[in-house]
Length: 164
Image 1 (cartoon, one colour):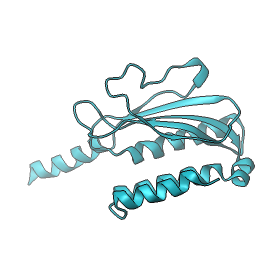
Image 2: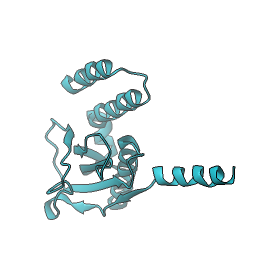
Image 3: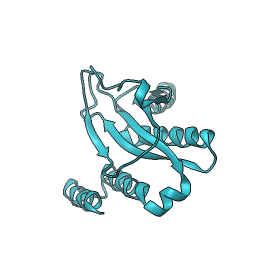
């Protein structure tokens, strides 16, 4: 019983561990996926013309037990805090997101790199730009939880991405 008591907290600690890079200007930094063994895929690329200084943030889970959604939340939270420090009432607006594809084995742990700009909160709420991205995240979480099937997820994803 004592071994089990030590094992459970150790596993929980391992599943929540991640490494993160500093937030850098995209024009002055290189992609963390460049020259990587597991290159990954573009999960999201904005179809809108987004102007402003672009920044890069990268997060990687230290094990294969973490999901991409957890490191995505963490990266987005850091990016929003970063934007608030630049100017109050600013939020991050995702330009693109690159993630690694499963299976999460042999060092291919969940990773995410987000390119974003900081814009005024009012602009985001009038354009609805993040709304589309947030809905993609929500349906992905529903897929991960087993609420949606892969086919249902693809149908909903296509609807969201083809909206104007």
